[in-house]
Length: 73
Image (cartoon, rainbow, N blue to C red; front, side, top):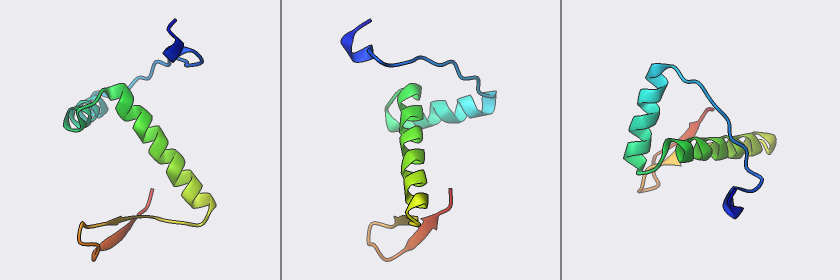
């Protein structure tokens, strides 16, 4: 085991075929691996949970900053 893998655990996750298609498309669009995309999703969910604990919302806005919508997750 390399030093960078110390303390890490490996999991096997089963996805339906439709979810695999979405995951592969998203990973390709982002230029990353499926595993990294799943790690990012977990990180985003952590942010969402922290926001909820603090009674905050996650907000999307366009580049001009004049159109906003909040994300309900």
